Image (cartoon, each protein chain N blue to C red):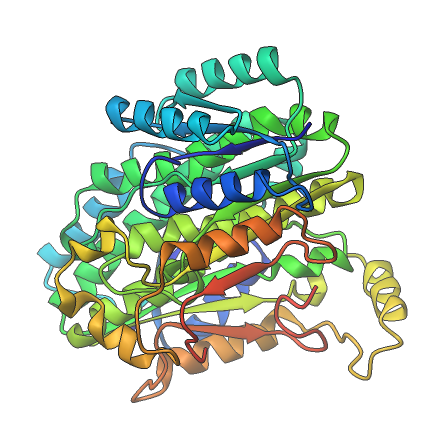
Length: 223
Length: 250
């Protein structure tokens, strides 16, 4: 399988790459110039690959990298709005050109990776509700448009992996949640990658337009 | 005296909101009795004048002002005027927006950008500019007009749904930032509502959706307007999105 990971930095994306390569996938990476309005990069990348006659099976768009809308808005709303706008332009273009690429190749899968923004209530992690909800709506809408081309699009809503934060934060969060029957149990990035790999290898993926929660103990976006 | 802003209030759902609020303003036992209405429009000056005359004739205190969400200078000018004239804002109904439907794979990047600019960035910029005036009021309510497409997606509306999903997220973010200082923030997500914007569409675009709704028919602009009116005094409702879509079971 030939896969592409867009924005390959960070614990989650790096773990996914390791996992895919260990399973025999050939993995390309592409770093998008963050917040850049000139997004010819992504279109050119797909065109370049198409010229060689190759095409991707799976495209992973990693949106878990280090940004926090909550912090951005608290610092300077005007800049924060500009950043959100740039990020969504980038993501929509990626989904568009990625879908076109896969449609020409008679099918494939796109997975968007986001961190669950409601986690911020319990743990001091980045919270990006605007981007997350915007992408969710985009994925749900686009999945309906491209299903006929054999393209499946899903979103993984991921709890931050265990390695990403100091143990004390997990312990405190777990302590705060003791009244609930389901206690929070942090999961290793490797275990999360295993699930994401599984979705890329299922022979007939019967899920598209889905928001797939990857984490334990807290219901998705349950504030 | 309360001051309430309705953006995009001269047409469609916005007009229904203005009509409903102007009725309530005249009721002595309503929470917004006697409020001043500030209505914005982007184009259609004649329509705006008619609206102003109509409401003034009914005895409603109203200002109808031109503002374009795609133009930050226009927003800044509007906010300056509002600040000078009213000083504080108790209700902000972010209704204005645009749509551009079609296949996403063939839609131009410029069209996508225009939707992001107006529906999401423009709405957030206006709201952020008004935050000091909302806080001055002590207790205030911000209502964001999302869409059912932003809740569960809609083919042919990828960028539009993206902007509306973004507004749902912004509702959560704004409530987290100011919920403890008297600001209520909620969103409304209409499904197919019988406005000019929808009735101009090819029925094939919405018939299957209507069939899937529990009610099985289009909603009326007043259905949305009534929810918006209730959210001006939301009580314990905060950071949520209320669907007004005839009952889609998802």
